[in-house]
Length: 475
Ligand SMILES: Nc1ncnc2c1ncn2[C@@H]1O[C@H](COP(=O)(O)OP(=O)(O)OP(=O)(O)O)[C@@H](O)[C@H]1O
Image 1 (cartoon, rainbow, N blue to C red):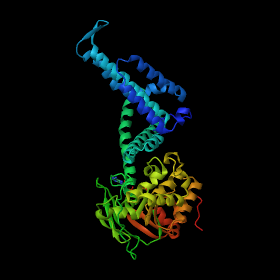
Image 2 (image 1 turned 180 degrees about the vertical axis):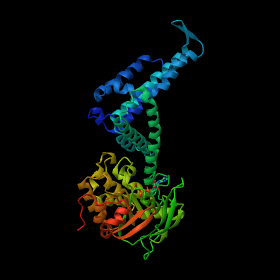
Image 3 (image 1 turned 135 degrees about the vertical axis):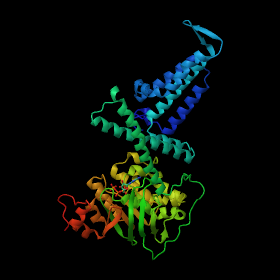
Image 4 (image 1 turned 90 degrees about the vertical axis):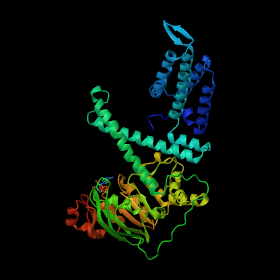
């Protein structure tokens, strides 16, 4: 919500601890509500006090004026009441107005406006993630804080999508100030909700993949699940004749076969639309309902085994923003293992180890929103490592990373002793990280072998729309 309701700054008001500001805001609103409606001077004093805070916070009143429009429906109601209220009536410039209605309207207008201004002042001077931290420090039940976090995350998703779409429209010559573009703007609002919904779906998928079942781990009690022992001789992954069609009838997989031994690192290559993501989402049961068979360390992927399967198969999604959603890195990394039943010292230790493995221990108490792209990618990996999966599945791990961050991530991944499946379009990365590659196209595996051999087969690559980067040579 940065930039919409929050106005960053370094004023004394901005620097106050968030819990102090939350308490001050709640007390102010309670005072306003408790003030008798006829105590007119008191409302003037409240308004003066609020404007004094704006002055200290160095935020102009006009900034609040446009945002205070959200109370417009209450203003309309307040102005209607004098004309709809009951007797006694008073003469107001020749119009009979209800005295009780006028007082009721004033009550709504004064208290509503002051309440909105207090809330806007709190939001303007406190970053969203600090608000959540403040709630936590005030010992609000963690379930409530988590719900607030999810609502905030969704608001961020909507605002970020709106900003991206606005930039795209303006770059194509649209100027939303012109009336005749109202139609295009209205369509834009429609697609904004569809895109936000899709993004929300991806955030939800990432949560489900980390064992979320719809109930927030509230830190109390124990829901520990007995891990089903892995069959020692079974391969890490066994996929047989996996076929799948989406609900709209689009057949994405036509019978995928794959066997991955423990400790292997395998790249999944293929052109756009080949079925790679669809395949990967079957490995931890996020997608199901097709035909064929999948086993993870001997355990079949079935509805009854989903919890254990999601503990065994950790999926790191392409966009870390889909994966990170809690106020601090530490909480985000703890989310998965807490879902799988870990509590107390054991949970803390798991979080410490996961952050240390990706070299991100020093950002544990920062907001994921404040990290760079490369740092977010590493923290997203830590959120999955903390679940201690036997198989690590990475969707486009090197996408959008600058060369140094890309190399650092490679070093982290190569240092992990896990079975790894990496979906990537980055062929040099596949060569560096994975001794073996499978090439998927048209919903089937069309090649499976040493990465170097696959990348050296120019005809094979060309047939499946793959290409080594310009100037890249296999030596
Ligand atoms: N929710 C959906 N509903 C219908 N069809 C879908 C859906 N998601 C993907 N598809 C289709 O399934 C096919 C495989 O998509 P998938 O996302 O698995 O490909 P991919 O290999 O991961 O592609 P990319 O490299 O572009 O990410 C594509 O033709 C795609 O259009």
